[in-house]
Image (tube, rainbow, N blue to C red; front, side, top):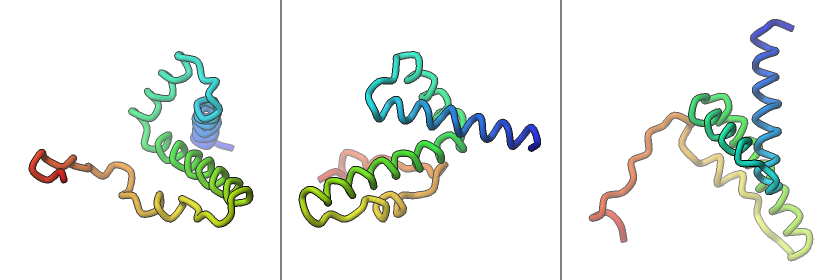
Length: 97
């Protein structure tokens, strides 16, 4: 395994650990700040974050559907979002309903 692969694996592991700590509501302030910096500075970290959150949403939807009846996974909604790095312009005051 090359050093680039080890760095990627290390980034992947660290981002996942921080995301799951956040999702499970036990992330410390330091962990939250570390995740925030990683997301601000790395497109790869943002992609990992989105995959983790997509998995979390799908699992939540799946198990809720098991208990409440039919519910559709959120994955199609997330898949329809613009690619990472796309600039999204917020609506102006005149464009808001």
